[in-house]
Length: 341
Ligand code: PHE
Image (cartoon, rainbow, N blue to C red):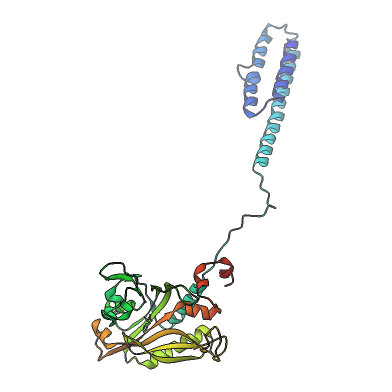
């Protein structure tokens, strides 16, 4: 009996200390110490012993149980430690490694200027409208007092989308004047930026796609003085208080009188240089008092209401604002250029 107990102790402790994981340990515990385990089986044999031997055997059996239990506890702690170690190793993060750089872009220079212009006009009570780039000829031309036969309607100038020339890529944002007058209650103060399209060859100052910002005010008693005062104030806000402008007479079918506004060249201060092509001035917008025919076509009573409209060239304004010499840079999206703003 004594030998059997000692043998059990040896075999059990040996197996336990080599157990690979918690499941093996549990199986061994059941095998040796469980209700139907090997130690229990041995204890059942105690009854067959000589009574004088029983106390010593009982003591030994308890000792064996305690040692087996200790071995299990010891191995369990080891196995848990091993498991933790393995997890730590597999989940290690080297916080000293450089991270993956997330490049965050920024606003395109032209949109920086557009936002500045929108802010200035919103501050003056204008609302910003959005309109279709695919437009009806009626809105792009006819309702703007530009009848059939006008040179601007030539196939060589305009991207038509239908054979009958009724639908086109808008050549100007001015159709938004009509859309605003047809849809909005009076008075109107609106700004309508967007893309326009013309059959122009690409060069330093031309592109078949460019951006305009249309603006229009219709109210009682609006005069050319409102137009000049507003646009002068906007240019000073955009380019600085010392900005000098001039208005030249011009012709547009849908305004009367019409004008163009120039800003004095920032490079030469008006003396003439390559940037302003020797003229001392840079043209930035067309404008005028909305033609009575156009107002009446939209059902507006010209004995009560009048208004002005203007169309700014956004690229020109951005080029002056950031001293950009070539229009193509704005559309090429070379990051070496864009990163500078
Ligand atoms: N639409 C004109 C152009 O593209 C500019 C303009 C707008 C002129 C509004 C007068 C009034 O040249």
